[in-house]
Picture 1 (cartoon, rainbow, N blue to C red):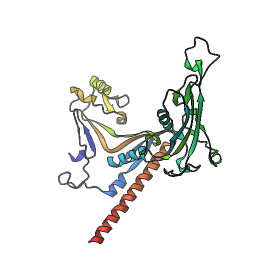
Picture 2: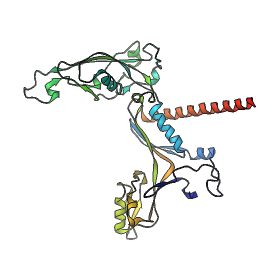
Picture 3: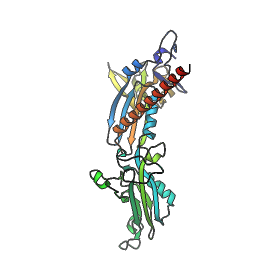
Length: 345
């Protein structure tokens, strides 16, 4: 690996090079590039690129892939939310079996702040401090006003589709007062749970409790949490004329534009961030030796989509808090191990 490629993953036509990091002494002849905490502090940066109530795109710069992946895994599996854990099926004459229906109900995201509830152990009884109760009672009837030749189930029947909006919160204890300003409810009202036909009934009670994604995916606060390395497209020789048009067509829209310099149409990279690194450009002999595709090793583009229970920027902040706590635990355990070794000696 060349020293100048230390911070790049190189994309070739048939392989990817410089995958592994080189943050250790004498990785390069006569060059000291060992890991430095001070360098990490100076290089570390987080930039928010795009933010909505449910999605965030941000850049995590100056860290190793292990840190980025730890953050991603924490977002997926270690931030608590409230979800339906127990379903008491009183009556279900629909076509969907009890256990399948219970599983579908459990995956309905619930709008409730997990910090307002205690953890519930297996031996703990349900209380207003650790449990949220929902009830569901639906029954399907024939629509007497429907035409005799009607084929649309939504017009032919009443109550044929069961949606998440039909889950009714049943406040316990002082919950009605505590959550008067933000009543507990399903986040989305239009989630189809099951379908019924005349004479079929569903009657059940659901208990929600606090949990994390590593116990079950229904507790995960994110729909997706992913990252990719920032693309870096290097034009080594001028690409002009018709070749410039072909070059632009090898990339997604907005990555490369044609500029006029001195009366010559020339290809120019304007936004490498949009590139998907398809390597299409490497298939063309015209560009051999004229372009180099790389990715910045320590620049991660994160995309996080919340299920809606917790705002995405809050999720990232909570994930960083969990990561810091893990580091503190590791430091304490390491200090104890060193102390014990010294005592043994």
